[in-house]
Length: 430
Image (cartoon, rainbow, N blue to C red):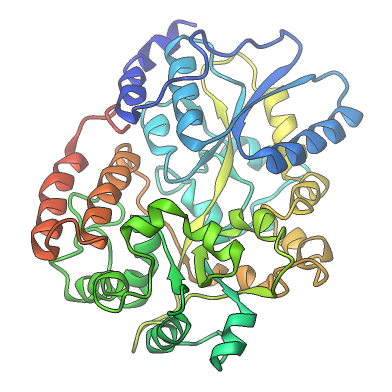
């Protein structure tokens, strides 16, 4: 266990998160079994329990203790304290935008050699974009991604028909998107619901051939204002709220979230990943579907990867049981079980292209939109401090988006405060 003392610096990250860990003494692991820690809502957790039950049928010698939490922030706090306490879980599910701080601390057992030796899994089974997001050093796989969602536009087809607006389709442009949003706004309705955050902004920057940072592999600064293509995308995004008023203003968003507004039928379009689908499937008052993001004038199709992966904690004397579980979870049966929940876009390509995921009887009818987006998916940097960069930049972007601060002053402050975070020492990622 002495190896884990080197991870004590991760406690600082938990404090930076500003949340309380769900336990204080790490994860209790049975000598003959493994502990799996992950996050999700009730429907997601039910899917994971079903998958674990199926694993138990063929692996009765490897009991699995599922230790779920509700949110990613709670998961980060749980992992931070369990690593620092020397009792990390055997397996944990983590988003690529958050795993960098653990990989930088060498707290993750790299998955590459296990996949290379596997007789049931191979790299070609999975989305290359999702795999690349979990190559912390740019070459070897650190964790094995279980999903590959993208940011899409969920739309209320009934509102589009009522407004006489053409339904969104592949290749539609920013102008088409804005025209639809304007036509759908009025009489207590808004055209668009979108979170003012770096993950929501990024695809528009990329579509306009800009970039978020100076060097995606080794970033030292944000380039939201210094790069003309990026700045044009930033202004277009901000104008949805500040100029065109097609997004619910600050007070209204605080009183009712965009997701709740979409569920109630008073929002024309809602930008989110596949995570929204189980909740959207409760809609019975109107027809809804999913469409790709619009493309910048003269730009390229782009979306942001949303992907979580199974990681193994480093330092254990034997990772065989943990890998056996991951092999099952990432095999055809395990991926089909989770795909059936509606929550995930399987990273395993054969399952993603199967009726289990593409079932036209289950909305969204156009589920292939997530697969069509796969070649255009891009990932944010995987650095030890990226999760903190994203969190703090998002808070400052929100100030500008809702007009709480002047646009130019706010963007200047954003870069001045965020750029030093890229140079923080490993372990200060938050």
